[in-house]
Every structure is written in structure tokens, then in C-alpha cells.
Image (cartoon, rainbow, N blue to C red; front, side, top):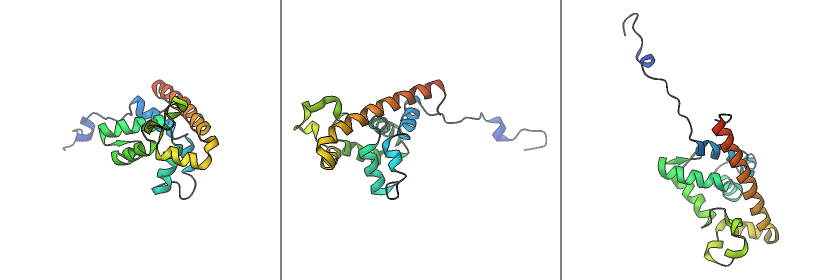
Length: 155
């Protein structure tokens, strides 16, 4: 453009992509999940090891948020829709919320998932407690993250 005339980029409105409340809460809560710590271990950052760490010890509320988001936008939680669908299959019919149902779904198709089978094999006596503790921790961190995102403290 000529002298004294503004350039095209300065004429266009400057926009920054802002995450929605649920996406922000999902990302923040997942960053403090047990899986996030496991991703620091060599072999568990990405690939099959990373997928297994996320499937077994990720935040189930974030996982469900990412699954829904990826159906709408094609991406959720930094992964494409197919990765999130695979995590959904690993989580099974209850999507990680099985501890809410207690033993009432045990022995039914609703109570079975690859994740439940692995956790059960690791320690059948403790698997339910681990699932309950992870779900409680996940709910607290997701809720706190949502408040932080809403208040503008977390971006």
C-alpha cells in the first residue's frame, strides 16, 4: 500500500481464538490427571503407552468432553475424533463413570470394558477403589477447572 495508508492486517479486526468453558475445563483438568504424570515416564508420553495411560488414568469427564467436542469440531483435547472414539471404546458403555453405579452393573454388559478388565487384572481387590478415587479426583479437578475458566483465571 502507499505511504500513509494502513496495511491490510491493521484494517482487519484482531481476533484470538478463545476456548469455550468446557474445552478450557477439560484441558486444565486433564493436565493434572494421573495420566498427565504418567505421560512424563518414557514410553508413556505418546503412542500405545500414552494411549493406555490416558485410557486407564485420564480424567473421564475430560474424556467425555473431548469426545463430544471432537464430534462437533473434529478435534478435542489435542486429538482427532478417531483417537477420542478409541478412548471411548476403551472406557466402555459407562465412559469411566462406572463407579457411580457400584456393583449394580457388575456381570452385565454395562459393567464391562477393556479398561475395567485391565484394572481388575492389576488388582481386583483394589480396582473399584481406584476407579472411585479417580472419578472423585476427576470431578473435583474438572469442577475447579471450570470455575477457574469461567472466572478467567485459567485460559
